[in-house]
Image (cartoon, rainbow, N blue to C red; front, side, top):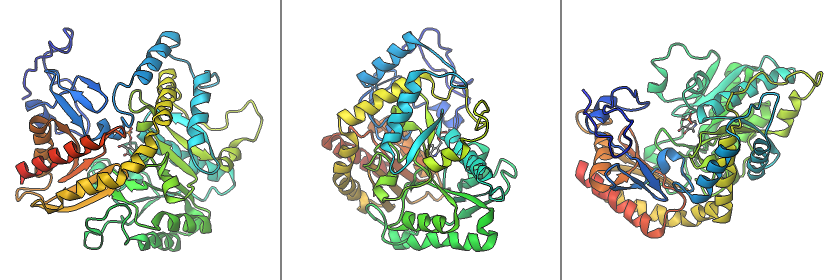
Length: 449
Ligand SMILES: Cc1ncc(COP(=O)(O)O)c(C=O)c1O
């Protein structure tokens, strides 16, 4: 089924076969017939094992906001690996974890000032949902057990995340999921929003559906609402103007916690440290991952407002306050990578750079508007999503062909969701590379239409 692959240029110890690795979220058989393999990276580029450069149009997987293999990050990881490989953060600690938590909390708005570490966006989503439930128990409102997500939302692949998530294929194979879940409607309507730059004018009214869910279930049964400020995995849906503010108002009115999943939007992707700042809304919790280490070492976490954290800090002080945590929470290598990454973001002004580049980036991507078969383009921050018409033989085929064509013929990596091309380059992308990126996407669309 899979092709034999010559790994000799990668490592003599590597097996000469692709069969053993069952790849996640991948068409395994198609990949293994015609692999898209990279073995080295620097700044804006990956390199194939043969040395062919691939322009990174997706920051890996929405991760590498500082670009790849940046010297200060590489050196920090190397130094930490030599100094202390692992230390538990259950009942023991190491200084970098405290330092990283403080630095991350400093970037968050309002009194979001405590950080619970985990290792991925999925763990961050489940952690936030568990904190929401436990917080309501701690404050004497244990009837609040219902969790509300949104159609087309993505919060990772844990049972909590897929339950509140709203992407059908991620849910339908996995049984009955968590009980007591409901969903808000998604915010996309092509007829009213097509070719919007930034936040669409139409759609804030979709937040009113939360009033409907409160009327249906009663506020006293609802613990939290979780949304992405920009729905990434479903194909880049920016929040409509005023939508997130309205959600905040309704949550405040009924004592419901509001969680922003900022796994993609955190660390400058929308031109601010967190999207919460761009939208002038302080959620009760923010989940993060990916950009926190620029993807160099797995790390995730939840930033929590003071009153939520403090609600747990009672009882005898030798007793554990929250029965939750991961062996690798606050891993020394992740903390070292994170501190170095945050320095790169600050020293190079990368969040500001993303903000300054947003209009140029949006204009450049919108030049693809008149290509045949382009149904919609959305942009926000350094994110763009381009919907292509599906092929007659089924949705997703054109998207897959576009990904293959881009990689093999154009030297470009981007994500696809169905027939939507999603672009989210590292924040270090130069003006001329924006032009190159858009040209390569244009060539790809021409080739697959
Ligand atoms: C908004 C959002 N939440 C959660 C996740 C899950 O993160 P991970 O794959 O690190 O578990 C992702 C991943 O893309 C994401 O985009």
